[in-house]
Length: 238
Image (cartoon, rainbow, N blue to C red; front, side):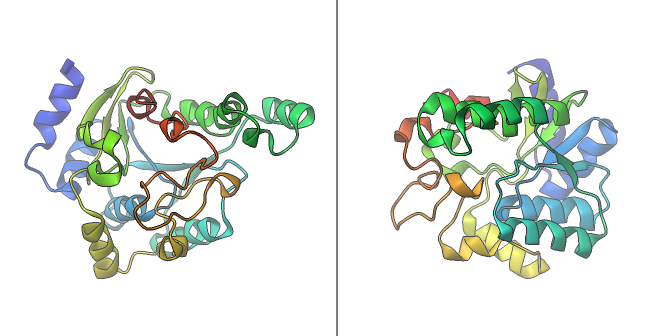
């Protein structure tokens, strides 16, 4: 644990998520961001930030391939809270080059092609969104997969040179659902149809009973390659 990770751990230990977010926003003004993909967990944290007017910038990665249901939740969230959700798009030059050379579905053909697509549509925009910040808030929960149980609610992200904080890391899925119901938080109806993890439409399917949380992402690949690179500590377990 480095000094930044240790500091954030000390600042947030014993605090409820909202209080922890308020504390971090106070100490790191203008240097704290939250990334949302509009799933259950992210909607919970968006509500915490927006309903309590916590000065944390909320952003999303608009890959150009997301579900119509996700656009609806995005729009409904902005309407409900009257807050801005900042969109980061891929750079058009590498995206056009990839499509011109390989077509719109090259990610099905190999892991390298899929990682190229994720790199262009997600990782490069993410790097821009995180640049200049010290704290990255995420909706990761420990029980989402075996790999994530090995993580902690505060982590140092070497690649982006900042600290990641997962405010609902210890929550169960039932906790998340209860919070959404209690606060009437808009959520993605794909969750009701077997989609625990919602990403780009061509790369996401519903999962069957007993399957891993991530089984519906890049289902045509080996189970050990289930991350796109947004959270480096996870993809290293591939």
